[in-house]
Length: 311
Figure (cartoon, rainbow, N blue to C red):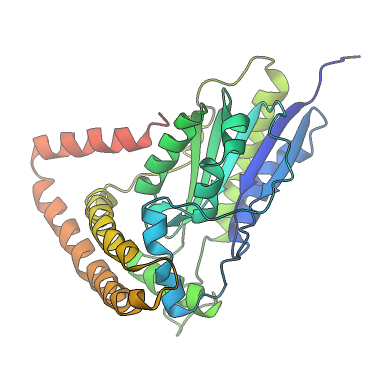
């Protein structure tokens, strides 16, 4: 009879709508069914809750703090930071091309430094479609805490980019995610995608249960846990730069909820909507034209490889 201790997995996540919780539970299900693995779920809870559905202006008012990684205060964690985990899983959503504020708060906390130091990390992302810039920030924060990112699992909302833009905004502002006007699919990630990532959990289970050595290399590459859409590379890069300009201005006007922010937030909301329906298609057209040039294709491929890397 083996006296080996169970492998320990910590899953840290924030789920506002419940969707991300279903995703992390799907990945974790094979682990929970394995006696040789112990799983601890840590759901992050902001001290001041973010509303859902969101009031219109409050939905945009969190944007400057997201972009500049200003962490809100979290309720106390239930996990013991000194626990020796074999794997840490981080589940988050991108907010304004940045990690969601609760995940930022965790990754910038003293507890994260203690938990992640020397540990392999897997990230799980569920989002509308743009996640590259947020993941770059998470990579930096994980590395700053001494963690070693080995894999990333990404689930994208169903429907085209234009359809998900409509359905996501409707979901966030009204709480409704059902089919809309008979034209738009339900908001969020398809249930088939939630089921699909269970295979990632099965792979993690198999490796943890069989291997006594610390995890140090990607486990999920052949399962294709994410796909990089090169059409998003330029819009995300441009968007991130413009967000920092708008964010700088709004932070200068006062903290979240300050009345001086309101007129600028309205302008920003208009700017964002216009950018999504104009800049994104335009950049796609530019990419299509330049994509005929071999040098441009090679550059885009190298760029995509950089974002695909967990390091």
